[in-house]
Length: 251
Ligand SMILES: *[C@@H]1O[C@H](CO)[C@@H](O)[C@H](O)[C@H]1NC(C)=O
Ligand SMILES: *[C@@H]1O[C@H](CO)[C@@H](O)[C@H](O)[C@H]1NC(C)=O
Ligand SMILES: *[C@@H]1O[C@H](CO)[C@@H](O)[C@H](O)[C@H]1NC(C)=O
Image (cartoon, rainbow, N blue to C red; front, side, top):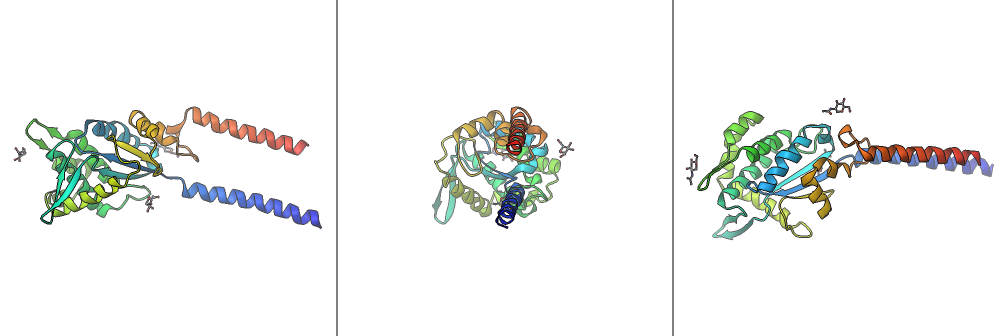
């Protein structure tokens, strides 16, 4: 009788263990990716248009819970009840950051697209602005209308108004507070943080190879984009497990 009871407990524990891992897979399936950057920073433009955006056009998009923070090394003060910003690459960058802050708040009310951890239209729109900004020595223009048309942004006039009025300043100051909360404080732009834990090696790797940096954090049901040595590692682990099980049965 004792034997029956303990083996029941044994099998029940195994069943519970498997049930809990299946549950965990669903909950931890997404990776938080926080991007601290600036609208006119060349390295930010390179990261966004060459690494982040192309990666999100693949199945990896389903693994990313994205937070965009177009603020970087900006600063702001309140002068006579008005927020005044200074930006790393000058006043036009403040305008670009405000446009993006407004886009993040206003496109589809800032809601993520179905099944994704970010809004697909907003990310496409921002990618376009980063890619096509026209920087002249004395003037910079953000191709709002053109990028809105390419990405089917229907309310770009609202975004334009927001960016050039007090709402844009408010949205940008919110991103400023989030940026100032980063620990350790931001030193280089862009900075990419995975799962809310800053690691310099991840941020550097992401700029060279975002897919590889992200895939380090995808542990279950890795998409084909992640395949490489890590796929072999998984098969090897399974093989070792099977062999150990066979031995356990034998002795
Ligand atoms: C995404 O994954 C599915 C299977 O999970 C596959 O059929 C499809 O081809 C993949 N799409 C891309 C763009 O890789
Ligand atoms: C992404 O993270 C936010 C904040 O934690 C959460 O509310 C949201 O449900 C997540 N999105 C997905 C698709 O998991
Ligand atoms: C910059 O260019 C835009 C569009 O060409 C124009 O409307 C604006 O007045 C210019 N701004 C400055 C400061 O020259």
